[in-house]
Length: 88
Image (cartoon, rainbow, N blue to C red):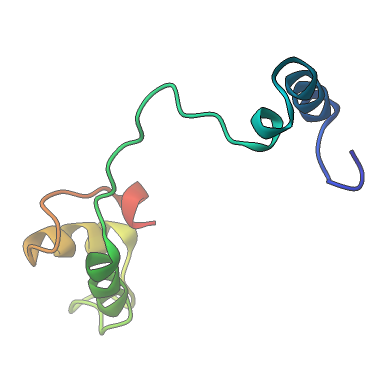
């Protein structure tokens, strides 16, 4: 536990998997039960977002906020929709 900075429960689960399913299963990640949500930003869109975040903020604002970035990426057509959580 200390060597891997993990919990006793994790050690127990991995040990149990090793005994019941073998080494390969214990070392491999299990597939997700639910498919992941598709990414809104690919590499190019993320680069455009970062460029925007480092640009001069809109008039009346000292810096870009997540909400302002959220609105601007949609306005510029970088993505069709986004949330401040996604931007963050």
